[in-house]
Image (tube, rainbow, N blue to C red; front, side, top):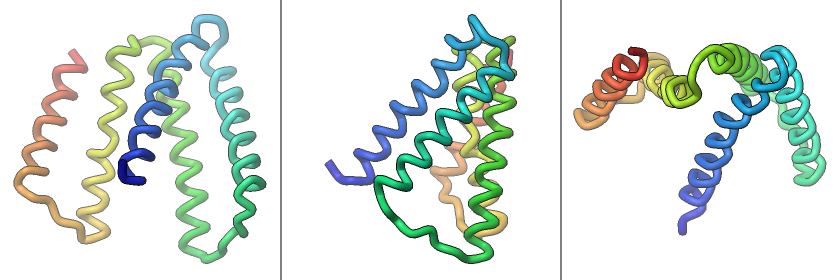
Length: 136
């Protein structure tokens, strides 16, 4: 198995648990607590990863700014995701929010000059259609 495929499958499973476990947690604690405990878990993993890999932190204005912004958007996305799960069904909230690559595609085309094939555009159309079906 190619390395990228192995990592992709592992990410798929990790994100599957990431989408499921907050709903379990919300059965006993409020959304604010879930978010704080989730953040603590992420912080512990980040610190352990840093020390285990012994990789020096690289610097660069764009890299640091984009990385910090990534953390901010990840936190805010998690915040809204947890609140959505607290009142919605996991079977609907998780797949709906999992369509976030649509935003990534629009940003990549607009700012990174990436292009879309006809097949990709058709896939985006069906993803938008999925939003309509999931939301009702």
